[in-house]
Image (tube, rainbow, N blue to C red):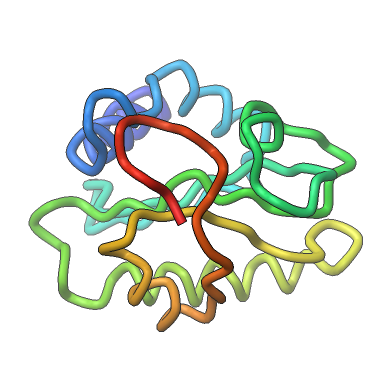
Length: 149
């Protein structure tokens, strides 16, 4: 049941971000239905234990504009969330998900994805570096109270 999956995804999202940063159920629903090929959900049986979701942009960097909506002709994938359920964190699942997601994006070809972009908080820079991303520096995007990189 897709509604139950969306509910579980939102529960993981809400446990992963502060109130002023988490995506709304409506945003998650739109991403799942507008850009399903940019959504990866990991299950343990029928329980959602993690997910990654993205939209596309024509901009080569993450900006307020590039992360505000999906641009179907965009070849830059803007990763919005890499979330793991609390009980499954610090077990390597996020790195496995990132590897699978990058493999999926590569399989879509350069006509769909030239590069994947994300921003994260300071405490997650090492995770994403291990996952193959390159730290560029502080992000100009303001989303919540904390600095993003």
